[in-house]
Amino acid sequence: MKISLAMMLAAVLLSAGCSRPAAQKQSASPEIRQGLELAEKSQCLSCHALDHKVIGPAWNDVSARYNQYIRSGKTSEQEVERMLENKIAMGGKGNWIWVTGGMSMPPNAPRVSAENIRKLTHFILSLRKG
Ligand code: HEC
Image 1: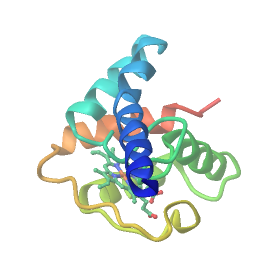
Image 2: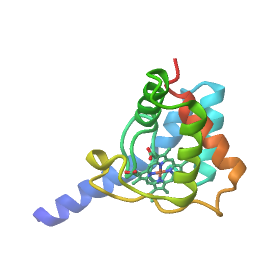
Image 3: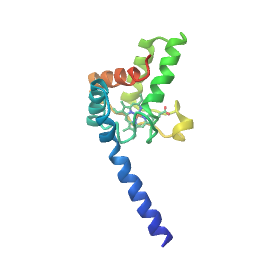
Image 4: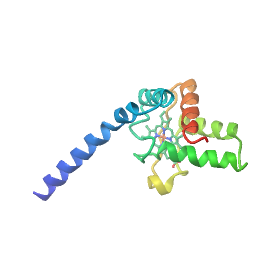
């Protein structure tokens, strides 16, 4: 009895998780909608969302962190873009251990083109620029 209740709850939570990208898109600006569409097409949204951790970190948090580094002069925007484009292409782990528990991102290239990886990086960095 206990087990089947837990399984039902898991099923409900899973289906709620699956409907999220659509809900996010409805309330978003055209730029965000376009970015999320590309992310969905590129199969990023099985592991990422804007405002909460899925398997990978929330993209709002990723954006806030690297924009803060750029503003503080620790690094340049070009540097951050290059690092993130490489990371998305090749995959990897280590930068968000406290969020992910040490999970890795698998490589996304060549399934996702270099051009689309560049666009996705730009989109993610634009989320918390101001
Ligand atoms: C199978 C799950 C999975 C998929 C699919 C995935 N990611 Fe990730 N992503 C992760 C995990 C886990 C991390 C945390 C890596 C770390 O700790 O350095 C991450 C980290 C990131 C980061 C932050 C990198 C850093 O070093 O700070 C960005 C940006 C990112 N992902 C973008 C994307 C994009 C764009 C896509 C789609 C093309 C994508 N991810 C697909 C799991 C995934």
